[in-house]
Length: 315
Length: 243
Ligand SMILES: Nc1ncnc2c1ncn2[C@@H]1O[C@H](COP(=O)(O)OP(=O)(O)OP(=O)(O)O)[C@@H](O)[C@H]1O
Ligand SMILES: [Mg+2]
Image (cartoon, rainbow over all chains, first blue to last red; front, side):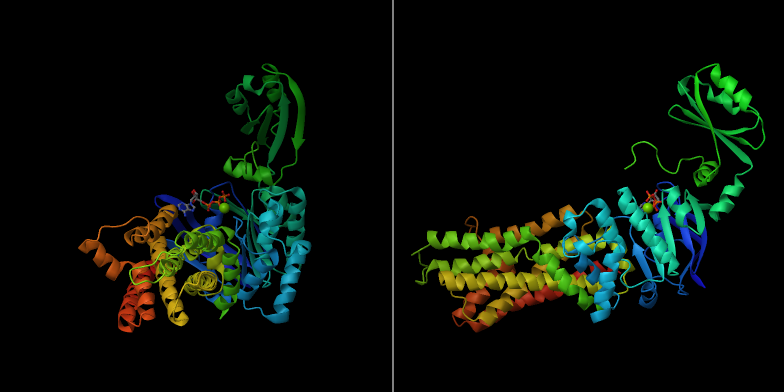
C-alpha cells in the first residue's frame, strides 16, 4: 500500500529552487534513508510531504489525501521527529509525552500505558519526572523522538534524529528504529551518516541541490559504481603533488585530497596503479596504500562530487 | 476536543516561568508593601486613605503586562522551529493558539486576584464589589493579551513586538501620571477619561465603590468595546500567520 508520494514537486524560496521536480513514492513497510548534504532540501521535502508548506508545482499525497493541509485523520497516522529539538522545556519528560498523547486523542489507561512505553522505548523511564532543561543533548534528542511515538504512528518521519549526540544515545536510537521496523512501521529517515543508512534502510534516496539523483537499495547503489576502483594513498606532503597530472593518467575518473591522503577513483581494471605511484613518488613520499571496496559513501561521492559532510569540525 | 487536553500543560508552562511570576506577583507585592508604609496616614481630598486608591492602581498596572506570556508562547509555538511539530499535529491550530491566549488571560486574572486578596487583607485596601473588580481585571488582561498578539502578528521581528508591548504598558502608566505628574490640559484629561485602560479600569472600580454605577459601566464598556474591536483586528492579522 502506498503511504505517501510526491509527483513533480517544485518548491522555491525566492529565486532559490529548493525542490526541483521531485518524485518519490513510499510504500508501507519501507525504511527510506534520505541522504543529502547540508541544504540539499531534505527538511523541505519533509515539510512538503506532510503538507506543512505550500509549493509551486506538482502533487503530494498522504494516505490517499491529495490536498494539503491534510485531514486530521491522516495526520494521526504520522509521527514527525523534527530536526530541531522541539520539546517543551517547561514540561517534564512525562508531561511532554502526555501533551502529545492527548492531542492524538489517547485517554485514560491507554494514554498512561503509551506514555510509559514511549519513555521505555527511548530509555528515559528513570527521568520521567525530570525537566528536559537538565537533560544532556542525547537525552533531549531521545525525548524529541518519543514525542512522535506515543500514538503509534504507521508512518514515522525522522529528520536527522542522531545529529550531535553521544555514540551511546545514537545506538539507542538506531536500535529503536530497528524495533519499529520489525513492527512494520514505515520510516523516512534523513541523516548525514552513511553507516546508519547502511544499517537500517531498505531503500536509499540520494538528494542533492533539490533533486533526487539516485535511489535504490544499498546493494544496488554500490553496484552502480562497481565498474570503478578506489585506492587511497597516504603521502608525506599532498600539497607537492600536481593533481592535474594525476587526473590525466589514463583510467582516472576522480582525484580527491583529504589532508595527506589522496583518493583516486579509476575505471575498473585500468591497471594504472604503477603510473600513479611513480607520479606521486616523484613529488612526495608514499606512506601507505589501501584499496577499498566501495561503500555508500563512495556512491555519494561519485554522484555528487561531494563528501556527505565535512570531515573536519563536525559536531 | 483535543485542544482542551493541552490547556492544562500550557497552564503548567506558564506557572513555571519563574521570572514572570517574580515580575507579576513578587514585585507588585513588594511595591504594595513599600508604598503602604510610605503612604501611611496620607489621605485624598475626600478623606479616604490614599493607600486605598494606590493599591487598586498597582494591581491594575500589572495587568497591563499580562499578555506577555501568551505572546511568548504563540511566538515559540507558531513562529520558531517548533511550528513544524505544531502543524503536524491533528488538531485545529487556530484553536490551539486561541487556547494559549485563554490560558494567558486566566493566569493573569488569577495573579490579579491573589494581589487583590493580599492588598485587601494585609493593607486594608477597599476593592468594593469583588465580582466587579474581577470583571474589570479580566477586561484589562483581555485587552493586554489582544494588544500583545496584534504586535506578534503584525511585526516580523519578535524582539520589536515585545518592546512595543512594553511601550503599551509603560506608556499608559506614564500617561496616567503614575510615574511623574502630567499636565492637567485637555489632551491628558481626555486620554485619561476615555482612552487610557488603567484610568478607565480604576475609575470603573472607584465609580462602583462610590455608587456611581452608570459612570462605572460606561468606563468598563469602553474597555469591552475596545477589546471587541481589537479582537477582530487580531483575528484578521492572525489569519494571515496561523492557518
Ligand atoms: N523558510 C525558508 N526560507 C528561505 N529559504 C529556506 C527556508 N527553508 C529552507 N530554505 C533554503 O532551502 C534550502 C534547503 O534547505 P533544507 O533545510 O531543506 O535542507 P536540508 O537538506 O534539510 O539541510 P540540512 O542537512 O542542513 O538540514 C537551503 O538552501 C535553505 O537555505
Ligand atoms: Mg534539514
